[in-house]
Length: 425
Image (cartoon, rainbow, N blue to C red):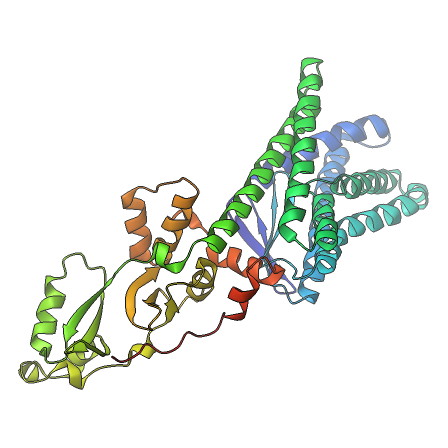
């Protein structure tokens, strides 16, 4: 699902509307018009019924927005950044930067949305009768919205992912077992059962002439199955990031030059670099690592002096490059590469010497290969040129979630510090 169009910002959270939302808005307006036509027959004219139906549909999505804000505000209170709230065909979804770090925190976030819906239902149903005395139209609208919020709250409490009830199940199992991964597995299993049940019941309704209701259940079921599949894929990504080492994904996108090399020779090497892959140039002096050279001397030194100037006079230390040990787990590399300013890591051997490099495209290629997916060469090369992940993989976000929830090796987590500076030898 795309991001859609941003309408406004609420407490720093962008509110977005997906194009599919207009479809459900139109369908909801039509359904409410038919409903009010039965409830208020003869009480008002057709234009008023259509206006009331449209306002009810809009207020229903305001209720959905408040539901998602319930999740978002509780998450923000725990220090979790909420990237956006998007309204779409099946309701709304809040996109968060990471999950809560504790099962209790995750439970509070999950329960906040249904609690908002149930409180709205209680308030609206309480004022339905008094409003009906003032205006039958307002009373009918309050009753409809109250009943729908009640359904929204109770439906979301069903114990299966991706519903809030599934998140509650995940948090409870996480609390009981100490493993978020086990919580996800149990909640995904419940979600798959409920989704298959929805598809089955929807099919029966369609065959019996249930029409829209049956198709809606089938759609919800397929959405749930897709969400369950995504959760399982997320677990597989976590396992690959935890099991694979940096050496399993590292490439060698650096060249080695002698410190006695002239700037003229460096410029010729740059010109001959037809691939334009921006290899690093590491500098040695008789087998001892000296540093790294970039294009800055070529930009600042007059061309007439290029022949006499040597690389050894213009080096930056190797420690100026972001680096990681080759025996570190890949999730640590994903965390470092999640920094927008870090496009490549220098991979160090056990002795602290340069042995390779690692980029986002290399990392994702290794992870997907572990999952049995081999990406086309062109796709990997395009991601490398852009400095991003192919297929939009958010491996940094996966790694942050692993670290926050304790789904990383304790020894590895304790070593998540800047690696020692490369040895200058």
